[in-house]
Image (tube, rainbow, N blue to C red; front, side, top):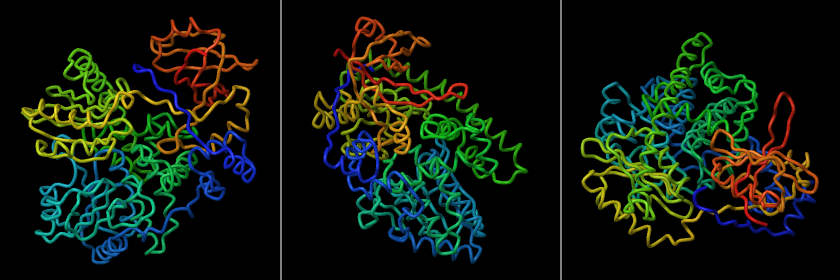
Length: 571
């Protein structure tokens, strides 16, 4: 980690933790973790540990969902042509797949449209409405996009096309004028769970359709696809998102699967494995995303829609295409990242500022979001990466906790052609000639809101835990807390002193591998991307304090515990 982190311990109420441990029969360390995460009510904590379909909320609590479901069922009854309009990322593709499949099963005349990143741009566009209308579409349902598509909504109304928007992005002050809008973030929507991914909102519409038609038994099959989009979109893993992610992962592990999903999991090397959030985030999602980043999102959409075993050869070919596109994506993002880092490290007008704004002519627009994320990881600054083509700069933004990127873009709105997104991730477009002016304005906004400590990463710890306390029971309880992500972070502890008794050895020129010992217990440990710290650790190997998470690994049928070090310091 380039910037040394500040170690902070998360607070908790010991008395509440003791009640949880006693009531639920948990180890004190797991009870502490629940209390830290705000799960202090034993019933609520029990529901968290044991998610079930029954915990999914009534979909009709969402404003307009009943209206949307009834209009779709009327369109099916009248055999009106329906189009599902998605988005080119994993959330948008999985949303498109589950809604289209549900409508097909209900007998709909339905197709889908997902914009091409480089030719169609982002979101719901008036020209797409015209195109779908020309194809005979009477009803359009957007998924994971559209909440800021006021112009497209006007065009739909002019053409006599009913438009239903389902989305989870932040709305403007005024909502688009259309038939129905399903978005828990609507200011007039009292839905209790505001954190759904786009695919979560699409799932609620599917749930409503299943309820209206007496087909609720269909719902689990949609949840496993929804889990992929939910985990990929990095939304808070609490409430309904936890139910979707936890149950979906169990179903992805258990199977059986339709031929398309089977081919995708096989290509990712996950057949027969216990699938967790890491597998989705780093193996499945990048393959799906590669389609929209590098060529056409339709490759991934067609693959996930493939349901008949007679399509096995086609599904394997599509999975192979995704594999090739993902390999090409990796090469592209590594090349652009190297160029972007060079700009940050050599140009003080960029690298010395609170927000890193870097741009390059012809940078592949499909990977600039990944590059922005990696710049945030490397420099712990909000990052905006722009690709310049024909005098226009297309940008992708990623932020750090505590800095609202969407608000930053709103402060620069007069100079932007378009923008949208979330607090932590957003996109924009502006004239390349205004790039310097934009960099100044974004940083002026940030300088009023970020102090030096905000630009140092925080390592949030769940308190001390000695190596001898990592019992089989505790490890099993950690598994019950999974899947981990925002609002339910992986348990991270500190302990010391520990001695480095084997190593540290540099692995693949990038990582540090070692064994650590405390009070007679020896465990393997690894610290990723920390090769440059080897001399410091070697000098202190007799005794350091470590911050770590716990992994349970398997090798040749034998399970063993390994520590993932986040940081170390002198005791």
